[in-house]
Amino acid sequence: MSISIKRLPGIRSWRRCPHGLLHLRERGEVKDQRGDAIILVLIAAVFILMLPLILVSTAVSALPAAQSDTNYNRAMAAIDAGVSDYLNRLNQASVDQAPNYWQYSSSNLPPDSNAAFTGWVPVPGSPNEYFHYNTVGAATSKTGDVVLDVNGYSNTGSPAVERTARVTFRTDGFLDYLLLTDKSLVDPALANVDNSGLSVSQAEKYCNYRWDQANPYSSTGYGPNMSKCSGVLNYYVSGQVFNGPVLSNDLYYLNGAPTFNSPIYSANTQPSGNPASPFWTDPTCSPSPSPCPGDGPVFNSSPSSIQSHAILTFPATDSSLKTIAQTSGCLYEGPTSIQLYSDGKMSVSSPESAPNSACIGATPHAQISLPPNGVIYVENAPSGSIPVDCPVTIEHYDYGGSNPPCGTGDAFIKGALSGQLTVAADNNVYITGDLEYVGCAKSGTSDVLGLIANGFVYVSRYFVITNSAAYDICGAAPSHPLHDPVIYAAMLALQHSFAVDKFWSDKVNGTPYEIYINGSLAGEYADIEGTFNSSTGNIIDGYLTNYSYDNRLQYLSPPYFLSGVGSAWKQANFAEIFNPAAATLPNVPS
Image 1 (cartoon, one colour):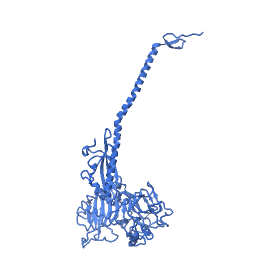
Image 2 (spheres, rainbow, N blue to C red):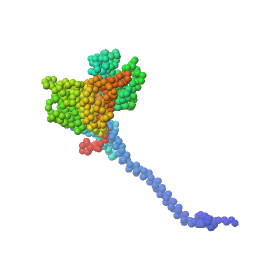
Image 3 (cartoon, rainbow, N blue to C red):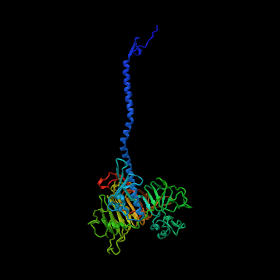
Image 4 (cartoon, rainbow, N blue to C red):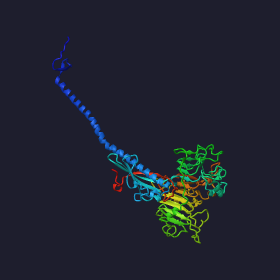
């Protein structure tokens, strides 16, 4: 039977119950649920309407933070502008040969009335950015560094931001390179003992020229006379490895595959003739300047080639250090021996110097403090002042097997240094034993030694005799035995070179000795430690070499170490510091 179901008034829907009955939903029940849905829809609509307001409110509340970030970055940009401004003034003063610009400050204004010393200077092209700076301390003449505090300020909106950086400037100089030479030559003074086939006078006449210097005795009109001077050219050859930057004012002479693991530069202005190698040549090949078969120097820095560099001019003498030594330093006359001790003391033997308890000691071998300003100068005794009974010996002295000439300004030095010291000589400096730092040149330490000579910086011929294990404090022994010099120092030979004294007398018998240097080495001529068989590459006499650059010299200088003449200034260090008290600064721009 079929049943017809009619929709009755008041009934909304139905469903069959399990027992076949219809279960009716009342209209009022459905009506309540529809009201809940309406409420939910209204809440969602309100939220949708409020969402833009919430987003706008959030964006507006973030504006101060965003503005602060903008000012934060712009304040640093203002610092950069201040650094560039001051560096430009430093270098322009050098070009114009004006007084040293580093001497000026807010209390000693320069002739250009630089407003950055006394107020805030707007950054060109950047509205609402300003810089102010002032020099810090008065140690520039001692360290060679200029320290500048630079303040940057930006008030593009609110809040304004001020930041401060401490920046160090120094000139491009001798301390920036592991090796630096004015001429790529063996010192002509050693020509007659270096198997060159030339006398000293012949070497001076035909060879004593950089590649780009005019030479009336050269077939090209410039550079060494290649037909006569092959024996005094300084070659870098296969097996030599350079772990530090290298600079020569000259062209390089390369043979084989020497390895340069750091940048290498040349100030030569006369190309080699080979476009592929404008800054080096190998004259052993014919016809030069074509490279020899097998020539392939390795340049492991970037860019992988020798780079052009401005010439670095050597001072004529170190006499300026004599004046400095006379004020809070130590000045000696005639041959003078110095021994350094790990407790920051030294002992000095200088028989021809006047008695001076502060610089010599009241008794023989007395240990005394290093000079207050860190400078020692050994001068030639003035003419007529040498006593008739001139002493014939000095303590710890070695002068090639004979007594030193009376009155000669030679310094003899060895030992372990704690502190900062520069030893300069009117004539030569002789290294008679290991020279090491108590801090072993580790990062963060400040021991540093400068050795400067008008003549040679020598490793003493009798080093083996005068050296002592007591001077080796950096763990070199036993791998570096007593006959292997270990030298921590920045060395500069203004008119000659670094060399082993009378190396030609030290014939190699078995394993050759080796010199270890951690520091820097600069000279008018290339360093020479021995001679080699050009066919076998074996050392004939003298020492092998193992040299590493002391990276601390990029920011740490021996006291009053000399700089190149007219060298350009550059930024050496940069560190952000806390802002100074507002009372110490000019009023900030509104």
